[in-house]
Image (tube, rainbow, N blue to C red):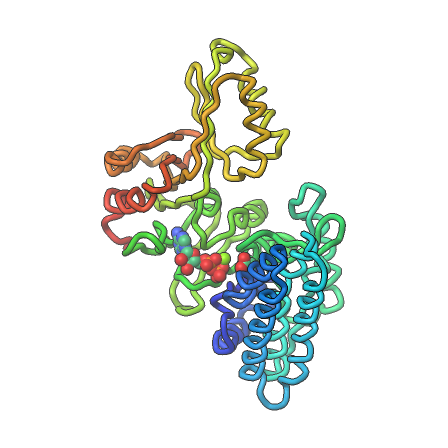
Length: 443
Ligand code: ADP
Ligand code: ASP
Ligand code: MG
């Protein structure tokens, strides 16, 4: 079995859906599960509808729903000629009715999740109808809500997913092509939930792990994972091969092409992940596997929205157990720490989720003086640093000589150097690193 995931831009119009249908039809693919995102712009529009409902602006939310309905009716008309459109539109309208029903009472967080789930339900509905009715190819639509599930800690429940996906596939032993929704799932309690923004990549990897797929393909709008953020830096280029660890670090530290957790299930099961470009299907893209290349620093990524916390305490001097007590505060508030540096009397660390920051700070103040810096960015340099005989770390620091570095973390992992800078310096830092590290394009 192979898993092929297509992102929002890849299914963003009737024309794009036709192209994706062509790509997934290749008979040499064998049995495959196609995981689709919502059409581009849809999840943002749904987020906006929920925001308007929270603000009790029912008129604007309703207008947003009607605008979305019109867009989907237009796509259905274009994609499904020959009398197939009306039935599809009837089915689409059931989803728009779900949205309209949620405008009649104050929005709850459960209601919000139902809103956010509609995008993937709509895109898969249209795509499945196109493949089966217009192209006449057999394909089975697998409802992701029947098998994608979170556990009590809001983490994907791998055992549940494996068992229920197998049961969902069982009646279709002779089928070759399956279509399902990315992003959406159920909570441990069974209510509709999601895998957070960009979560369709994570769905694909979880599904790949559940069926022990031979390969997971992530099809998007760029030809693989680039050596630097192409939204910020001109002249970036795709990296042909990354190890699971390198890709996991880049995804976690801001390479938007992959959801932060999406490499983990594939890594655990040793399933290669290929990043491919829907607009340029013949480009080689990036292969993520257990192999690592030899370059010392392959890529740079940046993660915004970081908060740095510095705790200065005389109690720390020569005291064992201090760090444990400090970390327990973060554990109690279920807040993970990304970077950490220590000196004899102080600890600096960073978090990316400030939701419980006030409670955390209140407890930390019992240790000593606490300082907080918001609007920080982690810049992560990833590669095979064991090969760092040529001083790539030195080149990186030389490139950044004019940029104030708030924290540096080196040595924690053989493939990562992390730096903390003020977010206002991010673009300058990424450009400087590009000059200093990657001036020559890859062969
Ligand atoms: P999809 O909708 O297919 O999931 P995304 O928008 O989530 O696509 O991810 C693809 C985008 O990620 C690219 O268009 C690119 O702008 C952005 N991106 C950020 N960093 C990188 C990187 N290092 N390599 C490739 N793309 C990146
Ligand atoms: N549609 C969801 C989002 O926009 C999930 C995804 O595209 O991966 O975040
Ligand atoms: Mg994405």
